[in-house]
Length: 359
Image: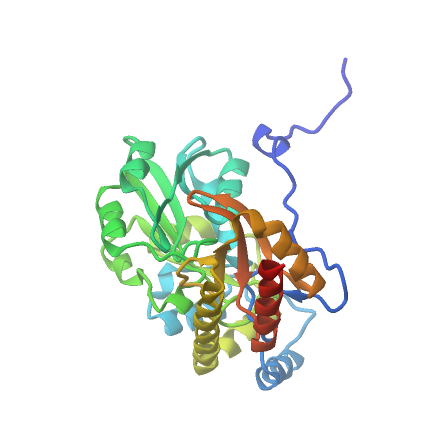
């Protein structure tokens, strides 16, 4: 008789452990690889958060349903309260969505896109099906026919980020309109970077009960360390997701930080405007050096360096700058994804790239 063992699900046992790609190499290294806000939350807002936290009892559990955060998000977005779900980042919510589906549901994904979408589908025992994006000038486009063919007769789930990560592409309205009309199942749009695009498909929620939208407070609101994501959708979707949330899903820190940040929406808008201006400037200057830089609607740029990628990475390392090595994409070899940093960091990056290309 064999020794007793753990009955692991095959989908979990076969998966690799997720590890962040960021390992600090020097104390002075500047992170331009995780698409975080370039500057910390300002001191005034931090002080307000800490002051409110100090007045709360820490020995008591937080709101059992995250009601305060949901109400703040409903007010900030104009979406009905019953259609707002919250989680420890959008990753938590996409994982819950995957586990709520019938096992072996076809989950259509685009490539390249945010890695966690496909990983969550795999861990939940769903069937990931990938369709490549198409290079179209300085952007990438959806292969709508390919997506519909992959889904078959359904029911299926389509998950894609818009703007796309890592390309920064904002997909054409006509392509998304067709998918909303013809896709045989449900659609999740990950709009983590919507504020930097000045664009959202939230209005479609009123007429498409099969649509859900993921958002985060990590980027525009500079709360990546707090970990707060949310979903906008129908009351039915939120009711199913809430069945999979643990008791007391949102901490007092998350609650207070979100409420304070959302009550100062003008700070986020100022932060976004500054990042967009830096993004445009950096893209212009990199293109002037002959670099193939895609149009971006996120808080990052995707640059294709081809055979010079290794030289550029070495120069960036010497300058103590960490970026994301994306690899070769269709029509864009040797890609690096660069988060938009503070002006000084962007200037260092530009100087390092110029040195590598001149060398």
